[in-house]
Image 1 (cartoon, helix red, strand yellow):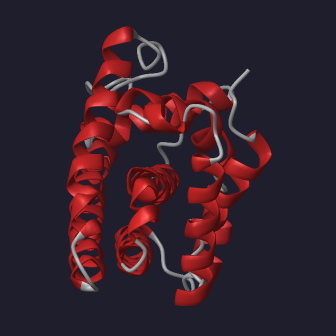
Image 2 (cartoon, one colour; image 1 turned 180 degrees about the vertical axis):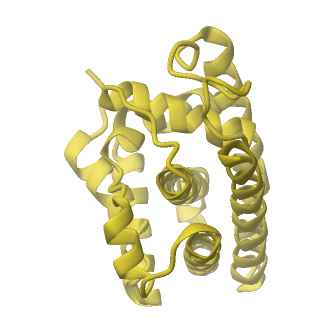
Length: 240
């Protein structure tokens, strides 16, 4: 049994993926997520492997992925490439907001040196939230292009994590990762490596004062936009 609080962890991360949060609420949720992580008996071992396992088991299976009708309604009737582009823009804004909130939270912690011990946990919380937003984007881009796979929650979670890690769409007919191989050891290793790289990049949020908020926001915006545009190009090509 995982020692983290399953319902609370999954709920907090899912709520952080919403695109209608104001800055204060996003910061509050991120701080709450950090507290859940730091309250774990294994908080000191929040490695890339641990985060990848949390994403696979606790986060990805519970993310709210919208169907095509809901997506079109939420984005004023857009469809196809226009809808996909809107999803990428929105996700980039959300992850930028998470980076800014994480940087602001770190700036507050800098004023209280004893609490700096929580900095690695805050970094883990930001990374979980950002990857969750990007996973939701990956899943919804597959919905837009008619490439959403069918499977159990666990299969779909690992499939979208594999797509996120490879920055490629899922399509058994054109060389992309499929549900038959996403649970392989190699696929899991690729996800872990990608999580570690993202964790390291998010270190910018811990810069002194509010510089981390600015740097974290821009880094997340750029990374999410790059991922989304790469997936959009790949899925568009697979549609033809």
